[in-house]
Image 1 (cartoon, rainbow, N blue to C red):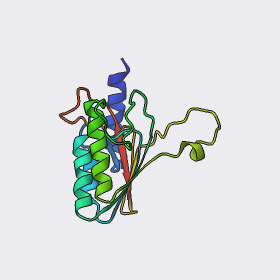
Image 2 (image 1 turned 45 degrees about the horizontal axis):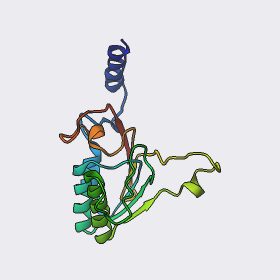
Image 3 (image 1 turned 135 degrees about the vertical axis):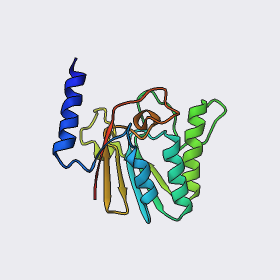
Image 4 (image 1 turned 180 degrees about the vertical axis):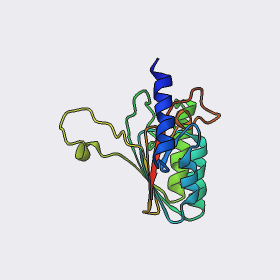
Length: 171
């Protein structure tokens, strides 16, 4: 029941205010364009990052000499894959794919580290997740997103579902 009301308000806001930095990910995954625009450096802080197009864009940028640094949560809910460990015969296909991606990143010179929960969460003994979704391009452009960098957030063809996520870009 609230859907049409919220949709109407969203359309009015877009028409009345300068929201030029706000993107609905399903309409335009602006993260792809930002990665393509990088000339020197890409910094990413993310909870999950499984979109294949996004991953391939990062690998392409590494081939062009762009420096890539990624901080990712090591313990996402429902995912038992440790991307930083070597592949094993028992790994599921998605885990093998993640480990291959991280290996390719590191081989090409990227930095890929786990979010340091112990020093950054602040409360001893409490569960803590790195739940930010952020990209900084060339120390000039910042993207903040409500969605992870997955097919469901970008509504890519590989996704079984599509989330309504937003990104905000400031330069």
